Length: 597
Image (cartoon, rainbow, N blue to C red):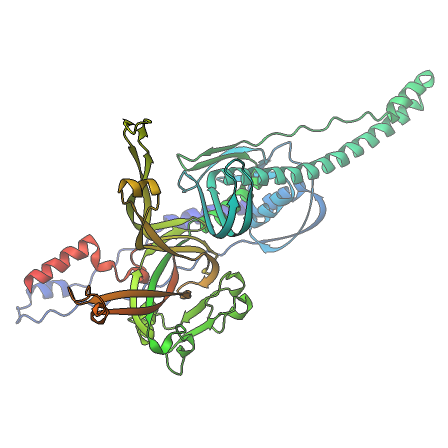
């Protein structure tokens, strides 16, 4: 005690001492003030500040605990004694722990004990409070749009030759139909609530089993001790020994401990998730939320270019993709071509182009390694395609989509035509018109243009799985309605004839790589009649002044797709470098520069 007082006194005395004032050397300040002024010297640049030395961090106190089936209270008291802390332990804290901790901090050891025993701790000043891990309400922020989305698509090809009876519904003939249905349903908040409830249910079951086993062991020990005391009392009870003996060895069933229900409160409008759970359950929920939010916030930019190649006479069989590569095409390009429909032939080589096992149609896989080229992989590929004929870009859409969210891009013209129904005039037996013919027109609408739907899935490595469906449609001709009632009335009703080129596929590609879907070829025949006006209608010799010219044109449709994972999605990404000058602040500066020029 006296040593402590002496040490405290020594610290107080050392804290109160101060350095004696050292008198400044006389003369040098006064001489400087009285010195004659000299010519002004050039101002020297300021000296660069010296890098301050890093302040060493205080040493971290660690502890080593090696125990086997020791009451947790004893471990906590020992830790408080070694760390020189006050400690308050709730009476409900019980149980044994087994621990082997080497050179760990107090917080790390307490976290490991909390995983074995349902407890929670907090530090207030120099006092450590230990309490049971009771359920508490916590609120988590979840940033996601409050929307339920359902999308479905059907791609079908059918041919039918049938005959039917007007009196019945039976039909006979041959029919061949191929249909591909794709459905996607996204209800983020509903799935999130169900998953969190399942996590709480699972962790509650595990905790209940462990608590039940610990309770059974404790009850069994207490019951055995009580029986021993009752047996000892029965040996001295005389006439009441039989009753005490039955009480000692009568084991009534113990009521099972009730379980509490953890509430999960979802608020999609505010973007919050409130949970009533224990600290152990909150840790499991937090780990799940971190994983989910990181996955659903991934975003991808999908660049698509749809090109129609009018093949020249040399390449009437289609684009020769073998010309790609080091011998005569683009440097850094790898490719695979599948003309037989066997997906195993499209295994990627070297760079990852696409997962061939997931391609459901014949096509191509194109990989371009030189992604830093000024032209870009799509521009270089389009320039190379001109070798095979005249190229025409039908559409070049760019679309962004979140992970597992369907996106739709539609650029079409709504063509209107009319369905005409005629009710013939009613005539009397003498031929008099009783009621005139009536015409009923119903407007019909058909979309002509480009529609592309895409659903991406992005993993943590930047690989993108795509479900893509581009559709190109156009009007190639008009056909008159052959209704004889219209013809009898002299009404001509043209109906548009639509050509549709559509493709639907599942594929996988790395971020920044290019996938090619192609092989859609078609033949066009254009019949042109030329004649000399007036002379072509002369009998016998009129054919000498007529000419017919049949022009054949073969085209191939090629679709380029390049997904780029954006993390984070900002205009600073290299994928948006082309559009950066079009931003409002940059466009204003560009206009000012042009006006100055």
